Image (cartoon, rainbow, N blue to C red; front, side, top):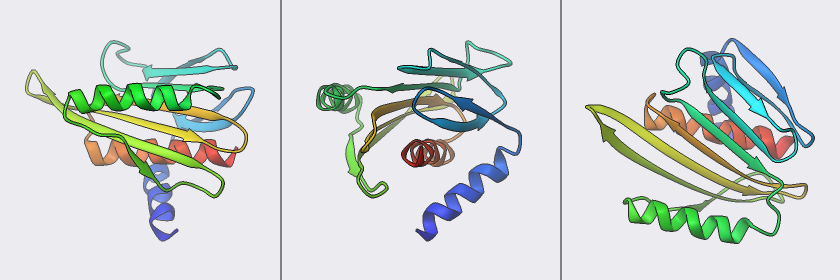
Length: 152
């Protein structure tokens, strides 16, 4: 629990300017540096306001009940083929979750890719996040998003 509170504090101190995003299933807070689009029922997409063709890219697909095992298998195959791996992680009570990350270099720039698949009592979801901000910072961001989703 101590680690999660440090993660939460770190993220919100970095993302001092934030926007609240509401869908039919949850409300989350995202940095206001992201442009956000959602259909409110199954998908949320976000990308940098200044340059939508460069990282960060965020996708949250939700209402994926019945597809979790297939999605988990497909994501793990893809990560494994690139040198990563999806592993089970701890999340809130009454929740199952898996996380995988991958770091790549492109044009002398380090990029990281993160996937978090969660299943709680209310809904299931997958967070996919690609960024150039550093693998550790990005991992904290993804876990904070998952925490927000699980509290909704």
